[in-house]
Amino acid sequence: MYQVLYRKYRPRTFADVIGQPQVTTTLKNELTSGRIAHAYLFTGTRGTGKTTCAKILAKAVNCLDLQNGDPCGDCEICRGLDDGSIMDVVEIDAASNNGVDSIRSLIEEAAFTPASTKYRVYIIDEVHMLSTAAFNALLKTLEEPPEHVLFILATTEVHKLLPTILSRCQRFDFRRISPEDIAERLIHIAALEQAELDHEAALQIARIADGGMRDALSIFDQCLGRSNHVTMDVVQQTTGIADQSYLSSLANAIVQKESAAALETIAELYQGSKDMNRLCEEMAEYFRNLMIIKTTRNPSQILLLPESQLQDMTAQAIGIKLSLILHALDTFEDCMGRMRFGHARTEMEMAFVRLCSPELDTTPEALLRRLEALETRAPTQAPVSVNRPAVSTETPSSIETQQEEPAIPIQASEPTVKPKSASKNLSIEELSASAEPFDQWQDILRAIKSYSSSVAAAFDGSSAFVSSDYLLIEAPQFAFDLLKRPSQRERIRDSVKQVTGQTYKLGPYKKPKKDDSGSADPLDELEQRAQEAGFLAE
Image (tube, rainbow, N blue to C red; front, side):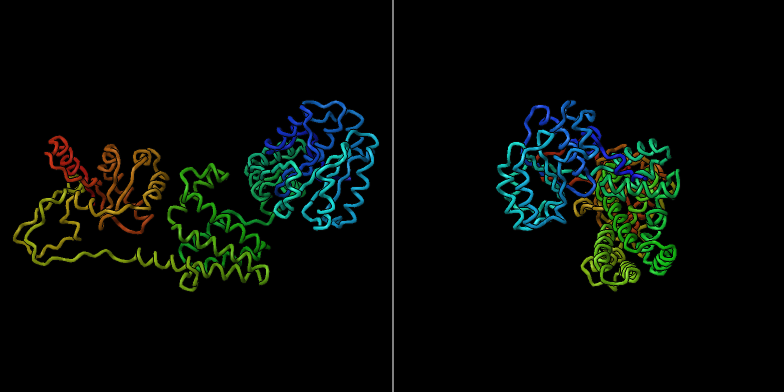
């Protein structure tokens, strides 16, 4: 009879357990030193190795030839426990034996010495399902059991256990297994099964399994039923998840506010038998990835995505405001809750219509998006002076005027010349004095890095400020030297406009000087004049 993979490759020693060193190392040390407790509590999410470690521990405490904390697997006790001929290790499902009568029978049986082993071990799985009366009946025996009795409790919901139970056990918390560890294990098992598993497909299975090895092996087992060579396409067809291109196009539809395009994509996925609940979960995860990319310096440490996919999502995240990402996350999380009581496809379509048309949504997140849109569209107009005889000589010269086209002198007899904005008559010091921090500068640096890592590195550690229609940059001098090149300046302008949607003039930021009674250093004044003459771009 065929044996499923998660049973066939269940670990038989602590060394085989993946991703739980904080548990296996401690248990092995206790076994080798003889410091065996009378009650253990294993907690954690599904498929992380709780029951597996409980069975290994039950075998190890009775093994006749312990190998560095691991059961040998060859002695008569180990073989008897493997084939079920020794009955001194009892595994109880608390979900179906949760009454007080079942616990009383267990207590009466525990009084008898084991027939073949040193310890009679009781593994109580899903212990949180026991009734309050059953817990109370177990308390005294759990606190002071017979010398030959060992209890191992396992649960996925430790918060449901009584404090009196927790205080009587040694607690071990099982963590979610990392996607890299799961993928490595899947590739190893694929080789044993004489199958081929692509690394990207293994990572995709690991992400779907959400830290559970059993779930990952079950998905992989199902994929092998479709093809002996498991690729990303096989995983997508087997699990019913949407292709990455669909998720990206749906996200773009939200950004562009194209509800018709979003509904057409949903209809296409629905006709392809894609589960709407799963699609909603994937969209929530997709925007969560965008949030991580948007808010962290090195998202690759958190998001285990293929390099090409990470680059595509980074480029997409640059043009999306954080408020939109958070609004989408809230909307999809709410949609998943509503799908339990309504039609899944309709709820999904309503969610996209709200995201593409925030004026139809009354949530605070949608109102914030609308306010930001109004602020972005608001033109920055300065009062125009009609009778101005000449442009102030304090205005710094621009890089474009110096390098690209000759300066056009403005005669004092031309009163009709009007400045573009009020900032035309302000010096760098005056602009810097009224400047405010520019929150989107890191997004602009990510956009610059997408086309040139060296240029982005030149601005490493820099900051920016906004004053009127100027973007004032505080950076090392060699960064300004790059901006004197017309090609680099235009690309940085494009990056600024891509992120902000506005066109700014570029200039250096000068920290406001404190009023000192003493005379200024002439060298500082000379350096200031040189910098003003060398950098100011419209």
